[in-house]
Length: 591
Image (tube, rainbow, N blue to C red):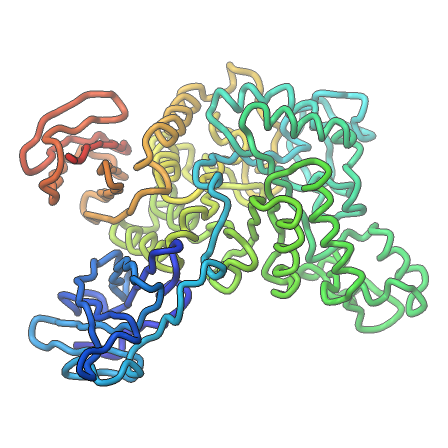
């Protein structure tokens, strides 16, 4: 038994309150080393004849990555408090693992040996807005979605789609253009819009803010934006804005004052300035995003800066009833600011969704007092590398995705922001070398995965483009130039997600098979009422799949959700899957 790999800590993704009655416990062991794990647990104050009263319950292997297995159990302690340890067996040896180390037998004379979850306080439970679990997002880059009002076009605006995008050209996209196409989005099945920045800024991307309280004139005015939000809400669509609180733009008036007045500026402490006068070459002598001189980093520990930005957060929720904030470069801002930001926006509207842009392990931001979610780039990476690039085989892909799921509590995974592409990445068509089968597989995986999926504008109709600025082309509105077949498939996948709970975030998910030779995966998603078997063939050959049905409490028939065909089975489901295709096979449980 490889004891060095056995690990647990009584917090974060290893021990947490899932709801007001339920605790989730996870332990990690070396991959393929342990045959069974049982949780030993009890109330810390329940003794009989000086012996601690415990229960013992078998844990389930919930996932495996390339190094470790993860074992999981949900428990409902009678008095919302728990002491616990683990009994592990590899078939030859059985040991007990506690906070004090390893034992041959479980010590029951004192609970001090054991891991402690002192009390399941409701205030400590991670609670993201419930509506997010059932949201399918659509990311809009406002300058490039649709031009509905030519009167607010910037100077030298180009005719729509007449040229390739550059870092400096404009095509006149605006709010009225979005309003004109809301019914298109409703028809697709979208019920969440994520806008990249709309505030007054110099660039076409607007990540260099000039005024956080003003809308950029090229998009319209506040009345038009209020109309947009209202029209979205009428259609059941939530609205999320993007804000950059890590840095301002070069033409932010407070930074301009520092440029003009130097050490005498009353705003000098709004930024991180190393010396005066300010210089931009060869490198800025003030902190910036990366080394970009026109994006000076804001000092969010300064009281005036903090209050200015917190009021930004409150203002757009209070005055325009927005539903979410996406926060750019969120990991470079101090944690205390984000804790205050959460309280500030929730003081106006309790169920605002707070999404951070973080590309790496994000557990420190996801403990219930800062963000509800982060942009799930590990999911993006694994999906693109397997389906689009063929740089991962099935087994490695399954291990990578399982690692993503095991890295966070389940209530965090249920609202994770799952994207395939964005304004920062090449179009998925280009990454997949325009292979339609691979594109369909990626959408099928994304829209049946746990979390809240986001589609980058135009991906559903096959738009192309390399890295920024190529990925920021004008939306193609000519039906003859849209991939209507792909759009129909995306629409159908979204409809399935909305129709079947097991298709979305409420289900428990596990990989049943990952075959490198045939390059296919089989996934099971399960709720109390249904089991959904997902088969994905990422190869250029037909494959025959046999799925053993472990549960006896199921109807002996399944439905292929893609074609509606019903078939009977006994103990296994046998199916044939065409090259670069998928199947969703639904089995209903018996009561």
